[in-house]
Image (cartoon, rainbow over all chains, first blue to last red; front, top):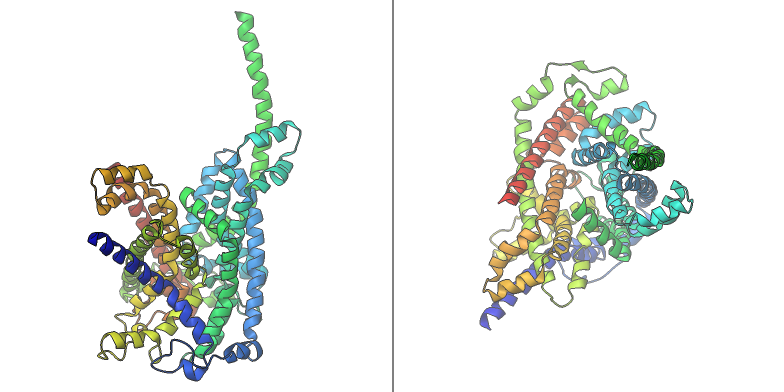
Amino acid sequence: MKKNFLGSLLKYGTLTLILLFLLFPLYWVTITSFKSNMEAYKFPPTFIPEAPTLSSYINLFTKNNAFFVYYKNNFIVSGFVAFLTTVVAIFSGYALSRFRFKWNSWILAILLASQMFPVVSRMISLYDLMGDIGLINTMPGLILALLADMLPFTVMLMTSFFQSVPVAIEEAAYIDGASRLQILYRIVTPLVKPGMVAVVLYSFLMTWDDYLHAATLIQNDSLRTLSVGVALRYLGELSYDWSLINTISIIGTIPMILLFFFFQKYMIKGLVAGAVKG
Amino acid sequence: MESETNMGNTASRKIRKSYFKRSTGDRLFSGILVLPAVVITVIFIIVPIIDSVIKSFLDFRVKNIISNQPGKWNNFENYIKLFQNEKLTGAIITTFSFVLFVVILQFVFGMLLALILNSKIKGARFLRSIMMTPWVVPTIISALIWMWMFQPQYGLMKYIVQLFTGGAVTDFAILNNPSTALLGIGIAALWKQVPLTTLLFLAGLQNVPDDMLEAATIDGANKVRQFFSIVLPYMKSVINVAMSMAIINNFKQFPLIWTMTGGGPDNATTTLAILSYREAFVSNNIGSGAAVTTVWMLLMVVVVFIYKKLMGETEVD
């Protein structure tokens, strides 16, 4: 009995500590965003805002609204990348799961290798290459580079989802005279919807997070995405406007949190499938 | 007898013929389907990587791009310089310390949290979903969150440290001190990465058969013993994937470090990622940056190889 009590004390103690570590910073940022700059810079800090105010939100929406240009750009870039990634991943995932050719193992090797190598190393050449094909400093250039970045993982993820669809369904449709494209489009793709959702979400989340691609390929302030825009505009050398930064943190994270909580079932399933099988 | 084999032959020929026809169609169809992914990956990843390895042997700067001049072979000078001024060795040590610190603690915290959440506690489902939140916070924002926590004048951590040391330490500034800055970044990295590791470990725990654990309990094996002899072996593949992901991601970590310290103070947090970026895009010496990434890629291949080998050998045991 005594041992049991000690065990659960240890268990709940550890749980509380880890959860505190994971969740308290989020609470801290949220309450700071509702503090006035005066209160935010108070030491010792207040754990509940004494005079909650929306002033830093109003400030962000009215005065510092360059932020929303980055925000909009990020939605455009991430949206396009998520869409294109899904289409390409469906095509190649289907091909890799259904047809066994010698080139399959080569393709898998290429994909695995590209996942492993550092982004900086390819940015060094992409900077040059994008200049040559006139795509430097353009959104299509950034979208293509990010699409390439997303493909390795998502193609492998899609492949594992297609593998779980029985071939017999396709055989039946083939005998009924459906073309290969029809089979893929009308019969198999609807069966891997969870995989598609996982790929859309994964690529959206990951490109929303991108820093290096945008930092090297985009120099025009009006084309910048969130991470680089925030880093360059709001993180001065010496002084930081912390209330504003905390507000930016909240606004920049909200879409991701909403996306995750609405679709977490798919997201978790997809990630686990990708990691466990892939 | 003869006619029988003949019939057999024609039948098989017939099948083979139709099979062959379908298989050429399949080949074409499958080829077209994989083409976009292959073309994009080759153009935007494989070719640039090869090109950067070539550039690492050249005297190649941003001005070469602007004036459209090819780089010149410079007798390994990029490499020699980097090794001579000890920038590279420093960055390699920093990178390995960072990866080791984060990956080991990520395993420990992820495993602890997964085991607790799996132990039929109340609200496990709810806790599982809220504990994922740090994972969806964009990296740069995680950096900002922890910079605010660690802020040297008004930061929460300064207050907490002051409180717990009874006012003995009043100038706690983890990111400004060369000997602790890497630790500060490691904490932020853990914060963002522990949730995903936990989630994967939770999925792995579902593979552990309950009856085995029950039998072990009846046989008198304690929890610790059960964990090492039953749970861990069953989770091997998940652990393997989660840890290789963690190793690769932390090896590549850039925005977190770049935002929190920019590689400083006194180069204490200059990892290979920071060094290569700084050489290539801040000092505009692209050849030198490429030399760093080439060394880095080689190290990564070696690390992944050793890791695979280690994991493979434990499998034999």
